[in-house]
Length: 506
Image 1 (cartoon, rainbow, N blue to C red):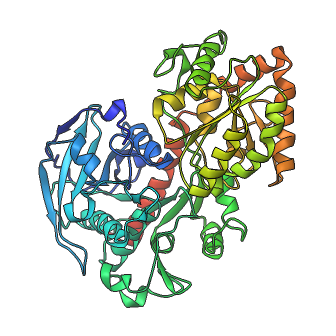
Image 2: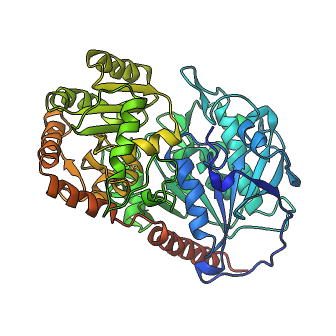
Image 3: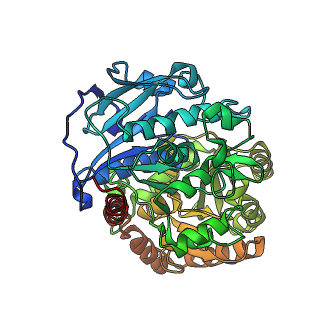
């Protein structure tokens, strides 16, 4: 579990009665942000960071509140959880209670209390090296159903949203439940990674109360199974992805994961948008937050002290050569086989590679074997530590990110803010957030040779101190704040709400 400083303190909070209005601007709207993870309490990947940052960026513009499952990590972080409402079950989905808490910076979160589903050890989705929870269809149908029922006023807690903001497959079914239960509140579905679709066997229709007529090509059916994500795409008023390039990519067969036809239709309807993620203000090297030594674009000497810390922590040899970092989930998507193919070139050039992450056993084994072949030059730490990750961004010269696809990515933004130039494939959010040859290095071909070409350019630039420092300054000056993205979300909210009001007049 990672608990962010923002959410280190939780306070009980009474419900606030608010009159129902017919909004005509995003500024007046009430948003229920539905997510399976948020870094204040529990984080698995980038979605946890986004779910903590985006609602906060929207707080001054909208009445935005978060809905999350009551995992064991949440219960441990917030021992006081006053119940503000109760909801019935559906089919095999058990009833639940809704508790309300407020973080130390006044973000309201509703917590679904269903201990039989959520109060267990492990991650939100399963247990490492064992697999997903076998009842994930029920666990996340409970989350989705609660969102739809709160939107429909089935719980008397004095607050009702004007729009549901859903995130990835664990929440996507809420758009379907709203449709099937005649709830007029529209939904926005944000796709953070299309490759994860929440696919279950057909018997889950009965278990989670999906109407039999919804099991067709226009609904939840996907190659004979049930896809929660497809339900969201089919029934949400608006769909967006987390970068403009990825929004275009997923309408193609190469990146569409079997849903490209439906997504092309949404794009043609003007209902598919790409909005790149941002990063929060804590990613500022000049504050020294959780790094060894602060620095800024004009005084970069602190990077050397952070590099020393990284080398010591990873048991790398003392060196003045380039330090490459990999901070990543260790999965096939991330293209780490391409990095392995380029590693020999890095070492021959006097460089070193520090790798941290966890994921698929085969990828972990391959990286471990690489490290064993190059002791003192390449090192692997299986696991994740937020403080150590920050130090890796702060101390490294380059970040290796050769992803096969990357919906948005946050590491390349963190790296640039910390003066570590990304070496990445030109795809998704990497293409949208890295300026090739200016703030990093991009390659096109999905091959070791493509990766080697970009690594070679990085090594050449490292040898030219003036150019290298100038690139660092430009990278550190990039604005990756949430402000612009939050405005784009406001626009989508307003569009969806206006359309809903027109179609469902009071």
